[in-house]
Image (cartoon, rainbow, N blue to C red; front, side, top):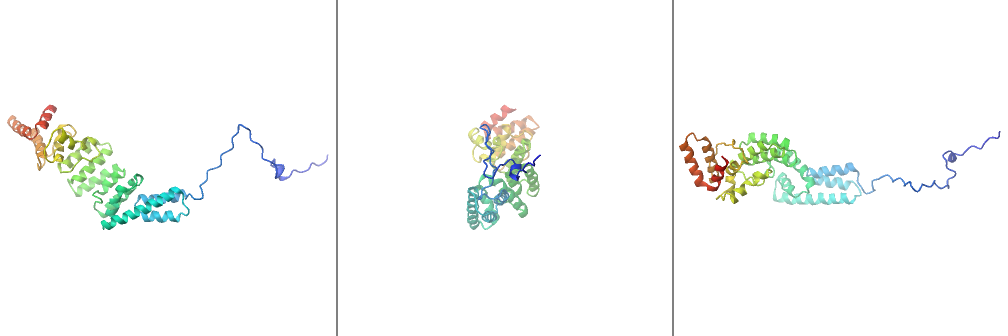
Length: 295
């Protein structure tokens, strides 16, 4: 039997010749999509993550250097380079007005894009803890809360209150941290203590508490310092628990009304109770009437 000619290497793989056309695809078979590739101008994902972390930690100069070192840039990287340069320029401007560089960083947070804010507060929390002082009128615990780390913030704020017992602003910030961890009872206890210490609560996270000052003015027509009436209005309207009746120094008409509520609750005789209620009626008839309705 004659020997058959050996197939060439091309024929072994089913290819007749170099010029042979590829097999035609069936009409129902779509061509396979080409694999996705980075464009020549797109920096590696790792590099982008590094400079974004630098931006979030308020290292604008470092972020700028990283972006420039990445080589040709895509449109997104160019935007972030422009952001780093504009924030660096703004920081230098603030630093001219505020010689303390850390205070200048704290002042810049309100001007940051939202995606940078949590990281900025984490950086400020670390700086405040390291320096042992507030930055931008916010303690390390407050910055942690604003960074979204409220559970850790409650522990830090409580430690800070050991060094500054009864500090009204720290107490209101502790209330916010508790509120964001869904501990409403602890939050309102802290808010009440803050209000009794003179803190304004119009900007706190708990909207029912934040609304008390306006209700004092609009509903109960209080005179003078509306913030001083927040404890009494909160007790009467049930926002603050009736069991929260600490002793206070009555430094305003509103706090004198609150003290009257404390004395009325502690009255041992009918005569004592009548005397206290007469004083409450004289101080604010509308709020006293509402108080009687809740008994």
